[in-house]
Image (cartoon, rainbow, N blue to C red; front, side, top):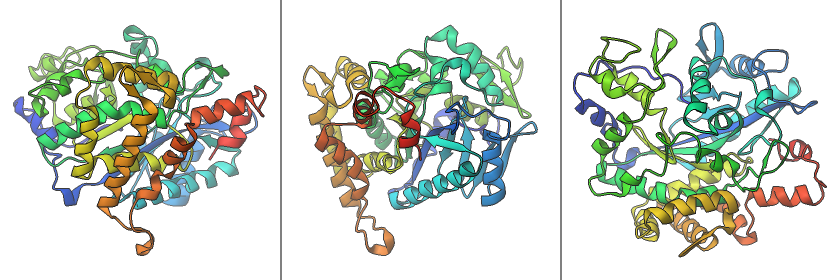
Length: 456
């Protein structure tokens, strides 16, 4: 999850909230790609999750990255809780999931190089202390009681609050991982078209990247349990945002939505102040119970936006949030899919043509079906396998039209990053299908095999 935001003066009028979002608009030549991915750390001998402290711990990994690879530490109090370097961040999810939030880069070649360098750095530290990292959408065996809590104030607040607003919130916090990509928009109209396509087609990403068929040591009946978790987390801040598809959608309409999402906290002087369930609308009037008489700043608004978790999210850029965490080669396929769909206008128009006539019921059914059945999902009028093939074909055409070369010009474009998805479409198997086949086949129900065979 995001580190505290900084900068920005006091909010003197409500228009600044929409202006903040609109300020992310960029000409096409300045569009960038920011890839984020999370992975679970564990002790190799016991397969137990990594604690924060100790000889084999998250802290040791962070300090190793800091000392050997010149990352700058991010502290909360006197404890290291993240790293920064060259526009990228390494941060911690509540249960110790290690996240890379990549720098904004021009091509998928560059962002994939960044991911590969990060994983090599992490592995070099982890191997020395008997630690492994694995890319899955959900922890395959661990119970909630086994999970550590990272020393971040916002996580303590969220842990207490989640059971009051949903049934699966702490599962999301402590036992899931995702891969995401952050992308730019040119204008309000461009943002609206991209956000509509992103929300409507997020179930395709869920199906293609489905990678969480196990939970607490056994099959859970879903290809993406992580996606299932998000459906019963907190309805006020999750979901597919039906208003985005209505007339009048724009930055101001998103502000209206965000203002109705209950707050989590206010960050002041290195501490998280409990504002659980309170209203940012009251904050704008100087009437926030947590800080009576105090007015919010733009960094407070930026922080609030990080506590909203729809399937695709608007900040100063767009976040694609529908995919499970996964194996090494799929970490580059996720940005390839969405860059291909959204960064070429012909591809974006073609993607919108696929889904523009869907109603809310179709979008919601597709989201549920993708979670349960993955690439085998079907809803009235839509077969996931056929839809996914069309989507990947459009993405490939979009990447080919972008024609961004790599390897010093030896690779003409970014289309090869889609190969993992094309393999899945040829075989009909997403990662979850492969895992279930192994579990019921040569693993003979021994889920511990997943660590040695699917870790980075």
